[in-house]
Length: 234
Ligand SMILES: [Zn+2]
Image (cartoon, rainbow, N blue to C red; front, side):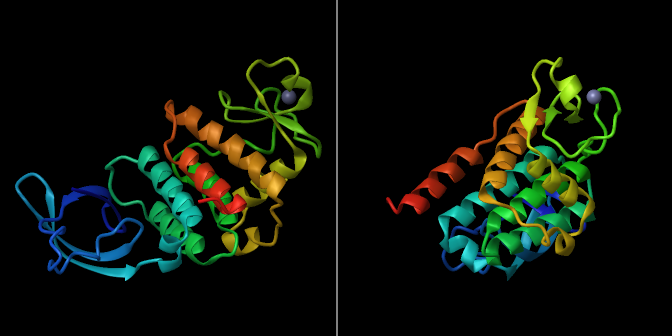
């Protein structure tokens, strides 16, 4: 059984028979994180994969555990935020472009921070980053708060009185706003410092978990492999 995210029919489940046999012509073409051309047939209850040919195997992504961690996180988010509800070209494009960026860019974290904010848009949780979600005042260039419950930024005046809000620094908010309104080429004009990256990873990770009402599995794995890569331990 496989979960597929397809261009034509969105998220679907399908059966691939004989894929574990070494001589199967489908073997090797149906690995995780692969963009693949498929032929599907309608079985009695389920779709059946009748032919598979890998188009993008994202080789570097497979050879580097940190990249595997980022790709797993990307897929987990997509899986948790989507249902079998038919074609969604925006999500398909975002996913395939993000996997390709994680594969080839020097700093895959940049692509993943961009993915989080675009994914929220596409699944209907676009955060409000321009006006305070409490009083409606325009957000000024200073440190702010973020409300998971209200889905956006809260000004310092309201934030001081509001329970359960998280601080968000001005540099981090600037990146979120920039990513929210930019295509990827424009987004790349910004520099993401490692401090802001970690702040956003934390904030967005907690916000996504809040929206999903259940913890994600991949962030712990990602933190572990990244620590190993940084310290050189095995
Ligand atoms: Zn306010």
